[in-house]
Length: 116
Image (cartoon, rainbow, N blue to C red; front, top):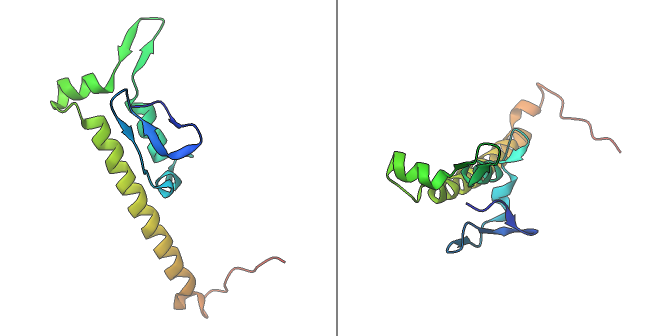
């Protein structure tokens, strides 16, 4: 998995020499977990890393081959998180919109005051 997005373009991610993901919806990066986009968490955790002090290579692709017998797991995980991010963001937006127009605001609680 690539270490980061292609420059400032959030719609493209270079995974390796053979795989580049394009047309990633920019909204997928809006779903944040613990202060970081969920997609960035996947990129960080699924990247190939080398512990220079111990010369140990931590390769998520090798782990996926050996443990899951599925070398495509890191890519599949990234694609799943895109789907979850988009669906969750859509549900949150729909839920917030429903709360704003709900009877709950009309009478029981005062709507938030706007500051001019």
